[in-house]
Image (cartoon, one colour):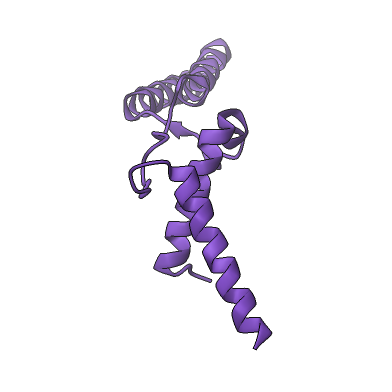
Length: 122
């Protein structure tokens, strides 16, 4: 189910508030790790080189060369996914107005709550 534009803005504001209040907790909720393009390209190149060595080992019946090719492939995969991780900026997508963002956010939430209670009371 897709979120409306209003719901997306509210979610972005909640995320920004969480990042401001508890950055470590917000970081633990990051869904995916981003790998830098340079690291990905180099890692794939190393994996392909290891695969080439492995194919050459099979072609020439050299088991020790096959083991080296496999280790090179494994090293390429480890290099690609275990290095420094690119991070998303803490302020990306933030649409908060100037001033005290927490106070304005909370006041808007309070206004919405009051309107809902008034509508339910009728």
